[in-house]
Every structure is written in structure tokens, then in C-alpha cells.
Image (cartoon, rainbow, N blue to C red; front, side, top):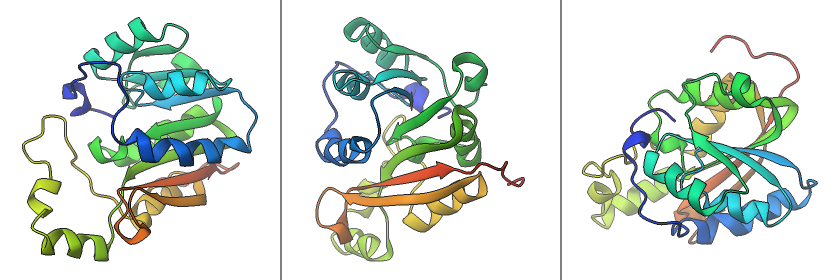
Length: 212
């Protein structure tokens, strides 16, 4: 969650368009877990944290976007949302949690291993990470290319835009290398083969990971 997310600008406290297809599955995943503390890595303008707080969770989170955190702190004072990123020692600052949430962040980070390790360090042994990112697969990439939308999909002109393009295999490999087992996977938005995003659920192993 290093830069370019520092350049990600928020203008208001409204939910992003991605939330319409992310939230229903997120709530299904959390339905089997008791309401409790959640850490959100990449909390943006606070809309996800606020939604979860209304459902009984206690949400702490960080984001490097100054505009996002200014809005979040003004609109949602019931949540502890502060400037920060995966480049710092978040465990020393906030402690550990049973659940870490990170929605639509992995596609923005310069150091995926650093990002995944930060999530690992924030979790108690056996804790879960819920991570979403835009979905990519061979068939979806073919469809983007055939429809002439691939160039726009690369977001080259978007300040703070996407710099990583993940498949299920690559995101699972990243988290396996950093001490996790995949325990759930969901394609969301559109039909599965052309899904807009994917949500992966990982459980932290009880033993420390080997050096990645």
C-alpha cells in the first residue's frame, strides 16, 4: 500500500462503484464470524469501515491518501482511521487482529511481498485475511483484447491507478509464500468468467513462513 495510493484522490464519502458487488460477498464471509475487531488495510474514505461498524464490528484502519483520511475522520469518527501504509510497522502501532480486510488495494502496491507480510504481521495465528482485487484470467484478458478495451483497462493515465494485474493463481502464490493458506475464493461482478473482481480468503499459518 505504498505510493501510488498516496496520489489516490477522494472527493466525498460516497461508496465506490466496486462496493455494490464487493459488499454482499464480504458480508457473507463475515457472517460466520462473531462481530469483533477488524483491521482494514486501505480504508480509503471510510465507507467500508462505517458499514461494518453499523453491523457490530470495531474497525481500525489506515490509508496513505490524505484526502481519503480527512473525509473518513470527519464523516466516521466512530472508527479509528488514520494515515498509514504497509511500508511501516503497523503491528507495533495498532497490535494484532483476528481479521484483516483489504479491498481493491493489491493492484496498487509496488511491493506485493511487503504488502502481504504486513497483513501477516497484523494477524494473530489462525486469523484470516480477506483480500479483493480486480479479477484476471486468460479468457477475460482475451475478451478485453477482442473488445478493444485492454488499453483503457491498463489505466496508464490514471494518477494512483492500477500497476499490478492479478489472477487467482498469482494472488494465491503471493500469500502462500508469506505464510497463508487459501480457504475461500469468490468471483464477483458480472458472470464468473468475466468477473470484475475476486475476493480471496486466506488463513494465517501457525508457523512462521519461510523467507520469500
